[in-house]
Length: 411
Image (cartoon, rainbow, N blue to C red; front, side, top):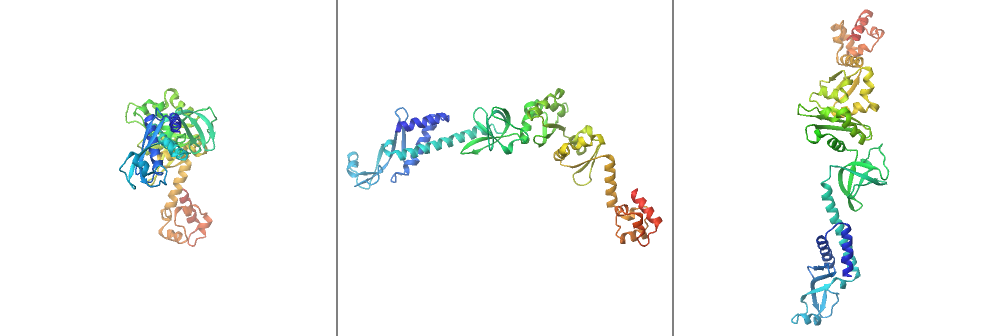
């Protein structure tokens, strides 16, 4: 039984790539823990292992009694005195007993404990090894598709690409090649599992580092990434080196570098945006510099109005509004894309709303008081009213009504 225990444990450990020294430590620790529960008089159990002979010997203290009631942990006075003539009842003497004498149940319990500890050791080793690769891109082959994601063979183990880390319009089948980002190592079904992602911005960072030497060596820095996985990504880049063009470095000759990245992302749109300290220019770049005529920033708050021509408006907004939404996330500005006439109308509206009726040409203090008491407090109130409505106000004649109405329209 001792030989069978050692051989079966060694075979299991070999499959887990655990060396003999570590096996010995695990066997000793497990057996000591198991046997101490069954030996009430022994504070400590020592286990000796002979791998060559397949022997396991347990050394512990047994109590000397007249008539033993506890198997192994008690010894009769008569038997004890054969080895220790001066021993008396109540004394404790050392015993060395082969593991085979502890019975099948004890050995099975010990074996299960050993297997559990080997698995724990494997998981710890695996976590240490994989932690070194955390944050890197790895290639693999889809092994199977399960309810919780793709199981991917990455060479030295299998990994999981869970549903929440997938891109919704990407689909794989068994044997498909896949590239992904290692973002976590966590317990799954009792073992450590490598968790992959194709959604996270870090995946984009690593793709850029692998395809663009200037980013890999630090000449070009990724300032920020925003992404709608599967649809569009914007990457803000800059360089402190005046001799390095961050945009051109990322695009590559004839667009080769960015095309390789887009190919890996299944043709997801990837916009390289040159980062600028000047917020107006950065907003312009984030929408697409060639699309934008002007950028107006609000005096307060982070609001930007981007002026484009009619031909470029839909392109600047993007399909489903994704271009302007991602530009807003990239720059931290609330962005409105407007035609020049739309901007002028909005600006005029804001002027009218925030200006009192006294600002209108032709409105004297007396007329202003009459309008104010009638509920016409802003220029916008007059602008939205008709001449007839203004004439219905006591003290306002038709000529005055027409004059202030025209003044509000031209305000």
